[in-house]
Image 1 (cartoon, rainbow, N blue to C red):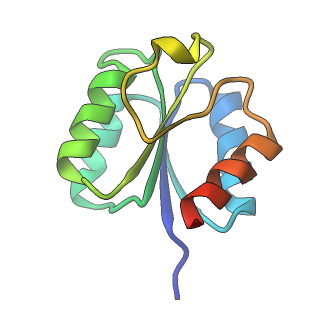
Image 2: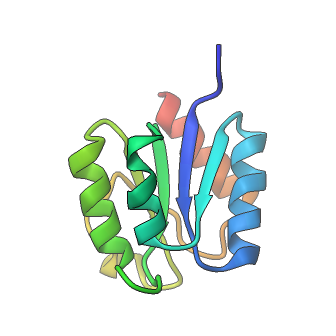
Length: 114
């Protein structure tokens, strides 16, 4: 059985590497992009079960990316990650405020399985 696919949309290389590490520890295969346009372009080739999207991206916003992702993959669990106040996050299945920790990622993934 193959690992579930997680899509990360994060323009910070450090944050992207951290998300990959944490998600792989939780048993996910990771498809990482640095902007919303690259994520959207990959939709024909991927089928993520989880997406973690930064709000502050170059080009299209994380909010726009999450809307398009929801339209294309209605069953994908969408998580917004940002340094902004979680009260300002757009509608999503969950929030993962930065700085992201191993414990927060584990709690998120355990919640997915429940």
